[in-house]
Image (tube, rainbow over all chains, first blue to last red; front, side, top):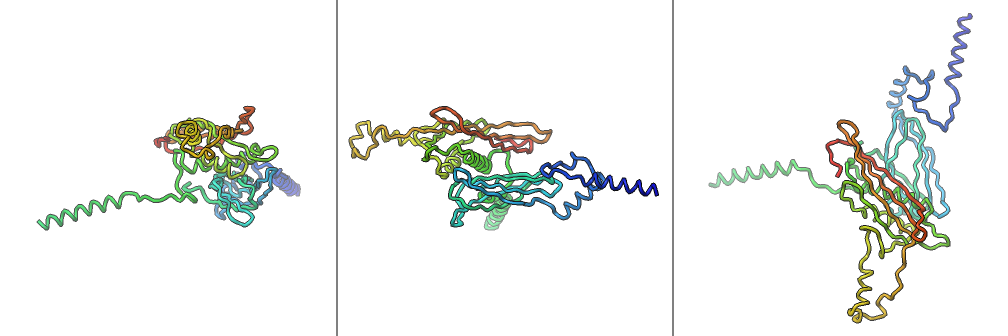
Length: 145
Length: 209
C-alpha cells in the first residue's frame, strides 16, 4: 500500500513538473530546455518522426496592417513553425490599390526568411506608395535548397 | 566520288548533331519567379532583395517626410564598390531611386551626384550653348535662364562590401554588405542608415568574382 502511494505521489510530482506553465513569449529549443516526461531522449525521436510524417510546417496566425503617420501601410505577418527543424522559405508581398490593382514596385520581390523550430516568427513589410490599401502574399520553398 | 561525299555529309551531320545535343540550351530567365539556384557572385536577385529592404527601411523611418509638406530634392552621392566584382552600383541605386521617387516623398536631381552616379550632362551642355556664340541661334526665351537649378537637400550614399571567409576544407563563405545612408546636406547630419547582409556558402573552388 505504501509502495503504491509512493508511486502515485511520484507520478503526480512528475505530472505537475511536466505540466509547468511556460511563458509563451519565450521559445526554448528542444536541445536547450530541460527534458520532461513528454519530451525526453527516448520520446524525442518518435515525436520528431511523427512530426515529419504528418508534415508539420509553418503556419500563419495573423496579419496586422496599419497606416503609419506618413500614410504608408505597414504590414506584419505573424506565424509559427510547428516543425522540429528550422524552415527557410521565400515570400513575396504584393500591394493592392483601392481598385484592387497590383501596385508596380520593385520592392515586390522574393525575399528570404527563416522560422526557427517550434517558434514564432514575424515578417515585416512596408508599402512603397500611400495609395496602397491592401496586400497579398505568396510563399515558396527556396529554389534548389 | 558521290559515295565519298555522302559519307562525309553523314559524318559532318552526325558530329554537328552530337555537339548541338550536348550543349545546354540558352533560355530566358523568369525574372518574376526565378527558380534558379543561388550563385556565389552577386546577381540581380541579390540587388532586388537589397534594394527592396533598403527602400522599405527608409520609407518606414520617416526621414523623407518633409515638415510642412512638399518633396525633398535628393541627390545620389558616392556608392563605393568594395567588392572583388565589377559591380555597377547603379544596379542597386536605379531601383532605390525609382522606388523613392514613386513614393512621392522625393524628387531626384540630375545636376549633381557623387562618384559614378548618373548626372545628365545635358543640363550643363545647354547652358554652355547658351553662353557660347551658338546661343544666338536659339530663340532666347527657350534657353534656360540663370539661377534656375535647384540644389539637392538630401544625399544618399553608401558602400557594397565583400568578405571572403574559409568555412571549412571544402566550403567558403562570401558575405556581401549593402550599406546606405541619408545625409541632410544643409546640416551634414545623418538621419537614416541601414545595412542588408547577403551571405552565400558554397564550393571553395567557385570564384566569387
